[in-house]
Length: 116
Image (cartoon, rainbow, N blue to C red; front, side, top):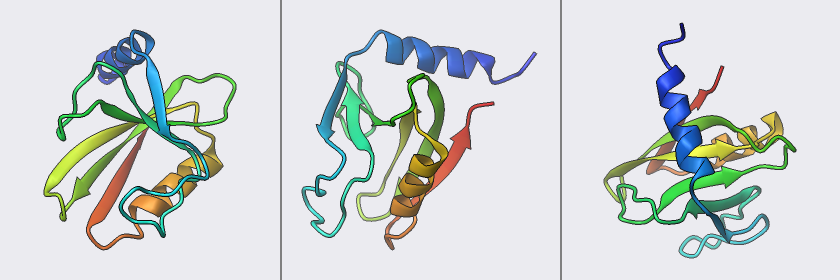
């Protein structure tokens, strides 16, 4: 038995029971850093809570399956916080674009954990 099964089952349950809100669609600019353009739809799970007090963040990719296929764990030295970002239906190309975004800023780093 995979020791991570319970973790991914809980994330699946959270995603399946929550409304996805895309507040930063692909092609839009970051609200505070206008040089950053979102290359994948970004949003959150409505009625959930993350470290920043807002909903749990998600990246919604273009894969037809729309299944949870990983998470990014992020550390932001500017905001002095950490969060997870759930990947839903992200292709390898989209994951690479997200990874690049998290690791180009000086104060923000992201670690990808892929689902088996």
